Length: 144
Image (tube, rainbow, N blue to C red; front, side, top):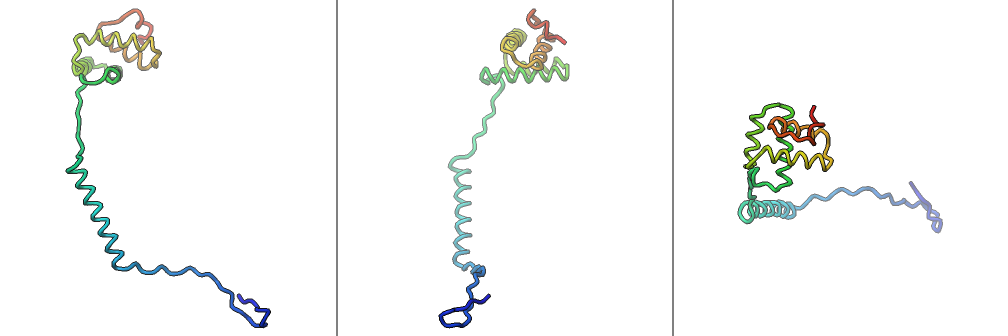
């Protein structure tokens, strides 16, 4: 593409911007990048392994907070509703180390009925309470 320089009446080459080639990275810059990566990785590994390692905590079901114990009980009831294996349900209930598991299941079921939990959860809890032989008048409408 040419332009005319009207002052001198001759052609002038228009400047076209072309992408410039990337310059090669210097050897020193490359060594600095690799050295920074190695130092950063080694410092982070030292910190995670020596200074502040992961502490694994394994809680037993009897040590759970009441809200989580209720969730655990609901899981036991849902497992019983699917498998109809009372021995397994009693084994899981024994993990909670309750004095009277039937009374606990009954109280939690009535609480769930009064609190408006889902029908599926209530039916699972009622099935477990029925299998344990603790069925109240409030639970009877939820029997399948």
